[in-house]
Amino acid sequence: MSVIVLSKNYANSTACLFELQTILELGKKSDHFVLPVFYEVDPGEIKEQSKNLDFEKKEVTAEKVKGWSAALKEVASMAGMVSGKESDG
Image (cartoon, rainbow, N blue to C red; front, side, top):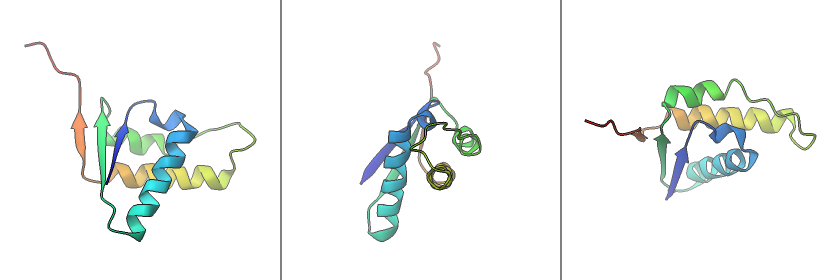
């Protein structure tokens, strides 16, 4: 089982995106359960981030970005937990 905690800045980290893609691929190949937790972010925002990935680093290819975008869309479409700030009152 993997619990993926997604935040507003999740898509800014190439390491997080690589791990996300790896976890989702593992889930497709086995009975590995994936639980996304959307921390102070709406799943729709994660899906929108998938359209705006822009990495200028040389080691990040267009193919990697395409895979990460697909992974973000997939995880945003999964049933999971949405956790937001608690209101005072």
